[in-house]
Length: 464
Image 1 (tube, rainbow, N blue to C red):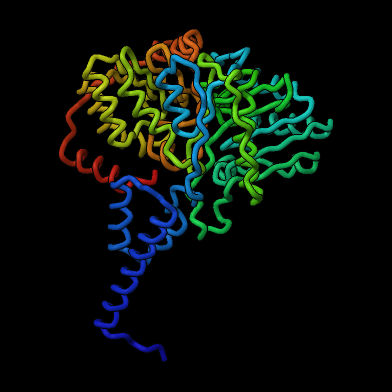
Image 2 (tube, rainbow, N blue to C red):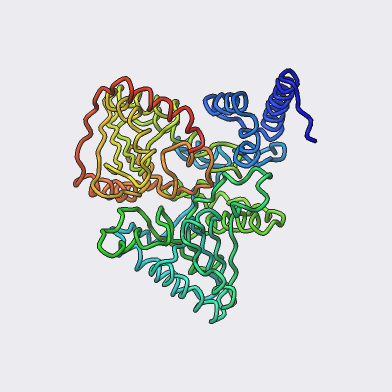
């Protein structure tokens, strides 16, 4: 016979569970140095107070924001030549590598150009081929890429493919076993249903890069925001392809991308992290070059977020922003609004309707705020998936990160910072080309119900 507990016993038991859940949240957040935004911390605490039986398992599975890191080591000084641009100084201060040279930069005009550059990069590999992507779709494009990787592996090229665990499910589980059977290696980054209590389930690898012949004079990097799926290149049958931004280049910068890939590859294999790459000698630093910016749980700081806030306050002429999702954290939105109010031309380009309806709904409050501060918001037809930030004529950031909390605080992301004025202008030209087809956003005062709904979504969607 099952014993029946009295109401007082149930209340006491409920209180004990709630206290233990709050204690666990507090201790793990402190020990793992999570440094959550106050709104996220408040949301977790209220979730635990209201429904501890659901909140505690959810926190254990999805609550991690930063991996546990060793005590901060003394950073070796980087001898930057003078004069030192603020953008380079800031990136180096965030423990990212200094700028180095690159050659043969190609900014892809559309999906066809991006496809040709990707397949050329794969075809040109003679020694090694390293590919990281969030999604490798089980469609015609994904199959074509996978078959080319298999062919390279059969030819004796060392091929390594890394796909995010959740992205692999979203891509309909492309037949990765084919690559292993051909002699290549493939790994999933944090499979969503493996060891969920380690707290990594919510940490996704959103980085996208393809590196051919790393460590050689012919090394080449293909990078940007495109997943390896039809909609990012050719479009599905009967639909137009998404508008996106990617690029490829050669030169010393490729070594920085390879070092990041090696670190992620070691993490997926549960082996010790490879040693840090050797320090860049002073003679190799190029203030008109580019530098890799890694952002995510593997970094001590929120690198990209810190750089964006700094850039908004340092800009003097213009800030160009392209992103599919715009749900910025309050400090970043304030920095952009202050830039607009002091006369900086702030232009934000995003799709009129993205593939994430909740994000489209949640963005409205930020869009109204930016527009009322003097920023210009442009809505592009179709799905715009490109990610770009241009600041004055001195900095262009291109890569995988969106301007929302998930990309800036949870995902593993990769951006490349370009400093050469001529190449900054090339990325700005891509922005202007996309903006030409966009229509201006008109801010409208929300009704009471919509205002409450937007605020509620922003409050409870701290992990979206």
